[in-house]
Length: 581
Image 1 (cartoon, rainbow, N blue to C red):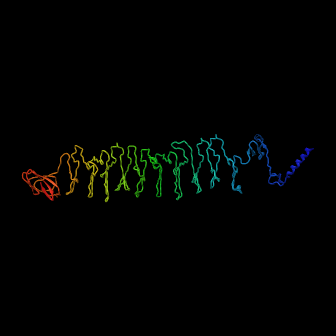
Image 2 (spheres, one colour):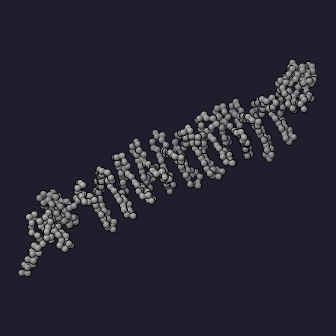
Image 3 (cartoon, rainbow, N blue to C red):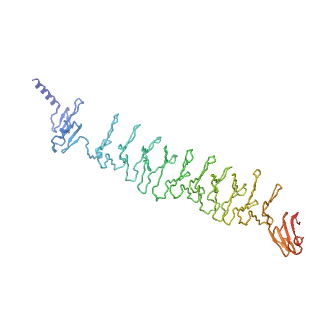
């Protein structure tokens, strides 16, 4: 009896929660006025209840016998923890199922901002969106996530609005994967990738490439790699587009032991430079700085491993440019500090200078010293065992091999040679041809050659001329003068000693044979005359002397002086009078 009462109460409560069917056959549960557009309208009167669908295991769900007429049937899979919907032929997970092809139009998004918006307010490490292509054995190239944009704007925008974290992370977690963690490709005319720092106070970098590879090799892995496979593009370009920016368009730095920049041309047929620098302003095309204190640490180092041209070339390609193709400057004060230095560790030249033009007063090598002391150029052999010359000059043409000049108003010697060793000559001149070993010319009133031994210079001659060839019949010293009143050789001893000394051998004089009487026009040191009267027609200066010998059969007269037959007289100009002795 008691159970019957309980059943009646239950039926009454159930009927009180059900609204009678209206003409549209709407069933309402927990609602007085159900939605006429719904076949079933369920509400929680206490606002703390949900709806539980039929709950089946996966085996139970898949074991149901269903057909096309059961389309729309929905159950909850307790094993997979998801709602499943029968579409007439198969089960699909309720909601967005995969594969899915969703097409949205503008009208579909009326009243909303985004077609898909996912917001996560948690404070853990969960991912907001996780895509996993889990079949590692699939040999096909598959992209798990593809975004396509056919209009204007970005296909994908990643934004990080926090104070820590990155806008996007692209990562390969398989060490055996040889592909790229991030790849950008475009078939249009724009950039495949663009990295921008749009914050003026920022100290960040638009693009940072980092590699911790220890592989090394001839072409080691790099932090950033650029490649151009076409014929009209550069592999990399760095540009500053702000005229007031004083920094470098490209900055390369290494704290290792290798070089900061390595550039190669692998095409053997190419004649282009490995590095090309162009400056449209007034600065340097290339500015290199070295802070090293060790020897050999140069700001610029050029090396040629082949057999072709030089390891470095500097060229001015403007005929109106009057400056040097190579300029070297140093503010060092040490004896070894040089503005330009050349070293050859092989058998070639330490430095080679060439001039192809025909401009006068120019040289293949020009050295200036604008200081108040020091030399314009120093050429030195520092190896004591080296027997060759420190300076070798050769002129293939008719000009001199060495030309030294002092302009008008300048003092000092045009050439000065100093020998401080124990043996050898300060100047050694050899001519293997028909010319002179030394040719000296003085255009003004000075001497062509002036040799002096100053006080304290020690013993020895100011000049020494030696003929060491036994078959050579020429003089060790030959002097000639084209001046009628001058001397070919002049000797002076200011200490009242001998002006001329003959240490060994004889003294050879010039001779002339006069006959028939009359004027003698040829100057000589000794004359022979016959029994006639003679005079000298050339001017005779003070101190000049002659020897005249009479070879005639009777007396001869010379300048009024009688010379008996087979005798001679010495004539000396003394006090303006030619006196016989």
